[in-house]
Length: 260
Image (cartoon, rainbow, N blue to C red; front, top):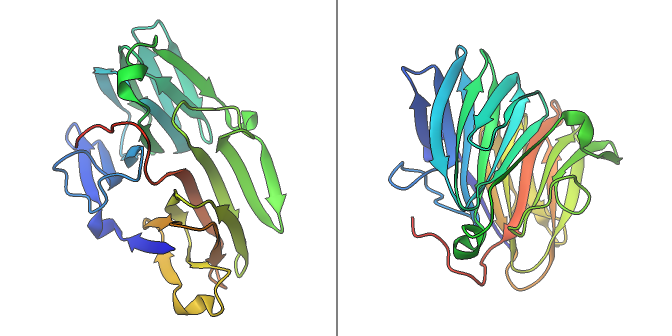
């Protein structure tokens, strides 16, 4: 198992307007300077924060599946498909941009959100009509596993299923506790630490602490299972709870990926 932690300093930066919206990017666009340029078909990941209400004007997309997840606040959406929508804390907007559409996004003051791009087979995706859907926090199933709260966002147990092979969940682990998840061979976990600090390790090792990696708020944690399935444990420090947004994707896919 390969386990790497990338700090905010190793991630790309971005902004809109005169800094009304600032971004930290665990996975940036080409030439933006993020150490991680992609994780399999996970193409882009930005953590945006707004200082004041600001609209990113209409702009085009095609092919990619673009998910916006509201960590706190409110974001608006309008597009050339005729949608005019708004979603609040815990909600998701998802565009499967297909053959192409224009959209605009408005972040209200003090809003935080993730925007994440998944890459299907683009030559096939661009032949499908574009779609837009949105979901409120209450639409997502939530389960408690030994004290850990897991909100399922993408996957069979969630309301969102993407063309791209992917799972996504929002995980909150109580202080001093751990949560384990199977990582199949040939797949990777990509997780952003939303709050707290802790460590990750292969719980099946004889001495898991020897290869454990520590992380804190804002870090990007990437874990890859190579030839065998592994059980990855995420453990919160003793004095604080830990919140991760975690995505599972194949480390490699059997179709050509966009050249960054």
